[in-house]
Image (tube, rainbow, N blue to C red):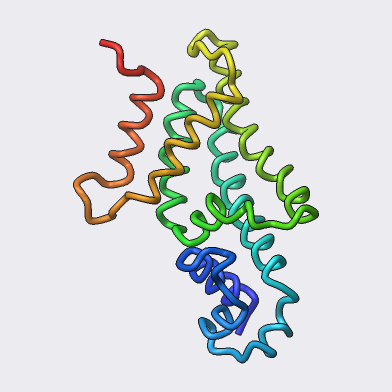
Length: 186
């Protein structure tokens, strides 16, 4: 039994039951451990939640920053970022659900530690928007608000997306990109 196994199981349990609905017994049972044995690996549910959130943000930062570091136009970066972000969400659905829906369960001290990582991730998006404005590709009066709107649209996808559905995640990403970059106006 590794710490990684415990975190993966905990993410699944948190996704299914919510942080507050999940118990340490639930997590221990998911990895075939006794609750007392689980405490040899982790000290609390809060520790588990914070580590899951850290891992999720680290994954996002690594993969999205590979795109932001490319020497391509801001609109191309944004299209690639949207596609990559949605791909990460659906490939890591348990991790994504915990990141998006359970972060509010963090206690104050852990929440304060989590926020800078979240802000770093949002900055990748804001920076690309600002780059697009500087190069006269985008009109964006409020990059922060625009970033939150874009992420909100994409984040909600995990609540309804079906891999066996009518569109695959890349087709959805392309449609989101078109909507976000060209809007609804004819």
